[in-house]
Length: 259
Image (cartoon, rainbow, N blue to C red; front, side, top):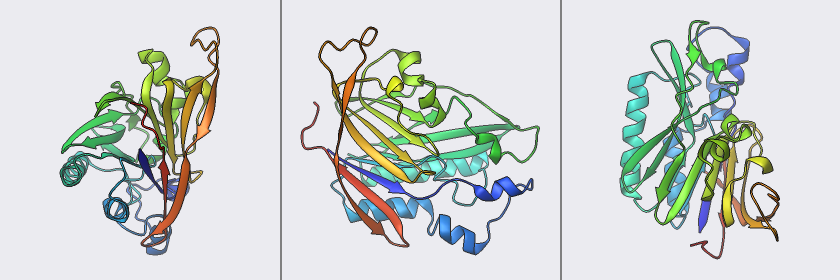
């Protein structure tokens, strides 16, 4: 199995210094953070190596314009990602997340696309998402839907940043996944939040710390979720390249499929 991770800084530093919304980025600032339209970067990654199985990008990756999207922009983005999935049907595409707003509510949503169809995962816990709002009247909406889905023969779980910190998959679903995926902007994998089967895979793609990782989780002897939840982390081999416009792209490979 091959997993491709797009690494670029997705933290909206410019929003810390202004209350104006939407706040247009200067060209020089935009070129440093998002040298190309996000889906063009995704296309570059798929063209570079079309043998990958899973493609990930960080939280907030899709907000390249430096502002939250409207509902219509959100729906257009979903259409474009679904169309891209129809071109690469056997791949699991999770190109980060997008912050958008509707009726004074703010949402943080990830698209999960494969075989020309798209599901959506809505972040449950705000971990700084309010930075994207344009007024105090706009509230983060914890529109939670379970981040559990099937892809090929795998049971997959997805969390966005702070959802991983509070053990959303582990506590809300009480389920051991084949693949556990975290997309984030300032988050690290937490051992207490891991919930995968023996030799299952855990992967993360972060847009603040600018790192990613894929690990095979090996349950230790006498492993028990309740009494002895100990395991070994086996890091997958990786290679790194630079896509057009200096975007880092790290590919991980696990020789043996877990199913």
